[in-house]
Length: 91
Length: 174
View 1 (cartoon, chains in turn blue, yellow):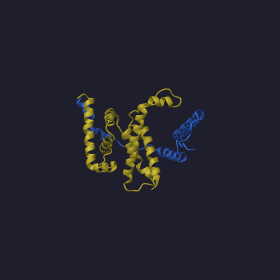
View 2 (cartoon, helix red, strand yellow):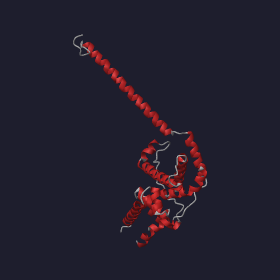
View 3 (cartoon, chains in turn yellow, red):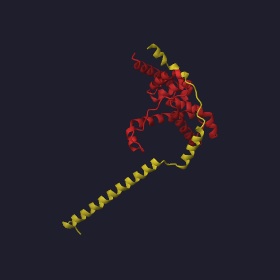
View 4 (spheres, chains in turn brown, orange):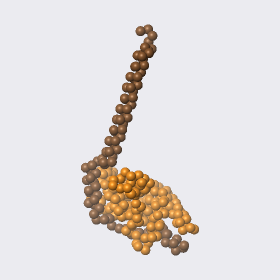
C-alpha cells in the first residue's frame, strides 16, 4: 500500500518530459486554414439552417391556411343566420 | 508578426500543454491544429495587451477544455451518434487510450492512474495543477494566464492537491 502511495505522488508530474511537436503539423494547419477560408459554413450548419428555414415556412403556411378557413367559416355562419357583421344598429 | 514564426516559436508549448490535458498524441495534434487556426484567425485583432505566450496559453487551455467537453458529449450521446453516422451500426465513441510520449515507461502505469484522478478535478483546479506541477510555471505566471489573483491561484493549487490526495486515498482504500 505504501509503495502504491509513493507511486502516486504529485512529484511524478515533474518527471514528465517535454516532447517536440510532430513535423508535419504545420502543413496540416495550413491546409485547415485554407479549408476554413474557402468554406465558411460547414455542411452540417448549412443543412440545419436550411431545414429550420423550411420548418418556419411550413408553420407559417399552416397558420395562414388555418386562418383563411376560419374566416370562410365565419362568413358562412353570418350568411346562414342573416347576422349583422358589425355593431352599428342604425345602418 | 508572421504566422510561421509564431508557429515555430510556440508549437512545442501548445502541443505539450494540450498533451497534459488529453494525454493522447492524436488528440493533442488535433488541439494544436485548432489552436493555430484560431491564432491565425485572430492574429490581426491581437492587441498585445498581454504577452503573446500568455495569449497562446489561454487559447490552448480553452481549446483543450472544449475538446474534452465535446468528447464527453460524444461519450454521453454515443449511441445516438452511431444511429445517425454514416455506414455504421456500432457505437462510434471509443475511450481514448493513455498515449503520452513525455512519460517514461517505468512511470506510465502510475501516471496513468494519477491523470485519471486529475481528470476528475474541476477545470480551474486541473489547469492550475498542470501549469504549476507539469509546466513549472510560477504562481504569478499562472495568475496572468488564468486571469486570476495570485491568492486565488494559490488556493486553487492547494485545493487541487487536497482533493487529489483524497481521491488517491479512496482509490487505495485508506
